[in-house]
Every structure is written in C-alpha cells, then in structure tokens.
Image (cartoon, rainbow, N blue to C red; front, side, top):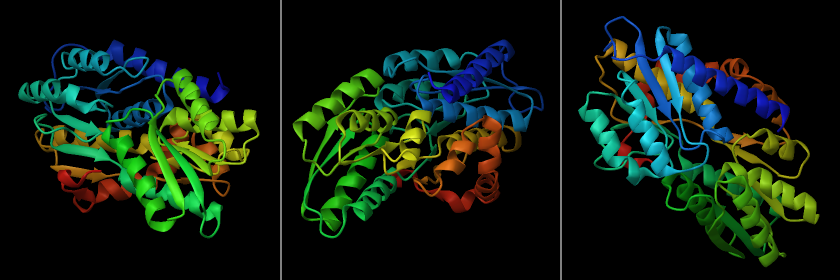
Length: 354
C-alpha cells in the first residue's frame, strides 16, 4: 500500500472508531444537545469514499457537538450497504448523508428513514423518485465528462481519426453513465473522425478492473485513447500503459494516490477531480445547519458542487492537498465559504441533476 493510502486509511479508521464510541441511542432533534449523525458510502475501501467521509467528518468536527458514524461495505455491494444504512438509522437519528452506486435499492430504505423523521441528504448520486429525499449534493457529471473529452482532444491534434474506448465501472449508476455520455457526446460533436467504442463495464473492484481494461487494450491495440470514469480506471490504465509501453492516451477520474503518481509521471495526461472531500463537507454542513437552525428543514433541489482538472500544471498542488484532511480543508475553505455563503444561488432543480 502506498504511504499516502495508509495515511487516509488510518484517518478513516480513527474516524470510524471514534464515531462508534460516540454514538448512542436517541437523537437531540436540534435542541442544543449533541447530534447523532452519520454517512453511508458505497465502498469504504476506495479513495472516493475516503474523501467523502473525511470531508463529512471535517464538517461535523467544525460544527461541534456532533457524534458522527461512517459506514460502508469493503467492496461495492448495494445490498450490503443498504443493510448498513438501515442499521445506521437506528443510531444516527438526527440525520444521514447517503452516497450509493445502486439508487433503486435505496428507494424504500431512504423513504422509511424520512418517514421516521430522519433528515436524509443524497450525496454524489441523485435520489430516486419515491425515496422522499429532496436534497442532493453532487457534480454536473455530464459536464465533467465533457471536460475529460476536451482535455483529450487538446492532445490528439486537429481532426483526429481512430477509435477511443470508454469504460464505466458500474453501468446503470447515473453519476458514471452521465460522465461517459459527456465524453461520448463531445467526441461525436467535435471529432467526427473518431469512433467511440463502449462504454464497456470495467468494474469497481481493482482486480476485476485491471483485467477488464487489459482485455480492452488487447482488443483495440490501435486505439487513440482509453478513458475511464471511475477510481480504479485511472491507476489501472496507467499501470497497463507502462507495462505495454503504450502510445495511446489514458485517463480516468478521482485522486487516488496511485492516480496522482500517474499524472505526475506523465502516464495519464489528466485526472478529472470530482472534489469528493468538498461534497462530503458541503452535504454534512448543510445537514447540520438544517437540523440546528431550521428545525430539520433541508433545502429542496440539487446543490451543485464543482470539479476540476488535475494535470502537469497543478499536480504538485493537489498532491500537497491530499496529504491530510486538514490540508484538504485548508485548500477547499475559500470554496466552502463561497458556496455555503449563498446556498440559494447554488441550488438547481433536482430534476436537472446529471
């Protein structure tokens, strides 16, 4: 394991142990006492979830008097997370932030939690109809896909011709599908000489992901680029490119330490950063404010959280940001203050989330 991975994992482990010790029975209902809250994530082992949890924990810590518990399965497993989420509702009575990669499975559990009076914030994956969840914090994932495609086009020269291959770890997950569609649509619009292949399923498990991408590279050795929309896609594509001495472009999403190394050494031309720490912070800060100051009334709509490009121009800055939760908070603080300072300006209709 990379040293930075150990740092994040240790921080996450400490958070879970601390939160578990602090959580008891019954909520405070915003009466001025301690709040019992938590976050549920789809895969507590992968970097994107580490970041969301640490952002959420940071917001809870800054708010004060919040006992906070993080739960999630060690591998992407919707039914397992659904059970953990339902268990969390027994202790986190004052509010829960819910991130998942299998939205239909959470429709009924989320609705039951809302019916029990537990405020629920959807994080990173927009809520389904029937879930009774009306507040969502997430990126414009279609736009992030467009961003990746445009970065690739900058490096492919004028009027490129050939194939690009797109991979999606969990097809059917709106967040990931929207990213892939943004990539595909942009190439079709701006590079008519490029044939888009996929999206193919690449799996979120790192081992399965590596095997899937290896098969795609072997099947399309003359492709111009291999582009993934998930966490493991980024570092596995870089690993394969190095092993194969590939000349094609490779890139993915997120800021796993191995991904940042791949951008630093030039294996991947970029990574697209959905800024998961920021989303975890924003969702939890708004939840706490709603419970303490607004009697549990969350805003209605999609709170748009930004993302960005990580490339050779800013890689050192992002590596420094990722060294600790405090470093991340310090880096994000101006954005946090701006977004929370005018929540209404950043709200869009929930139906427009993509």
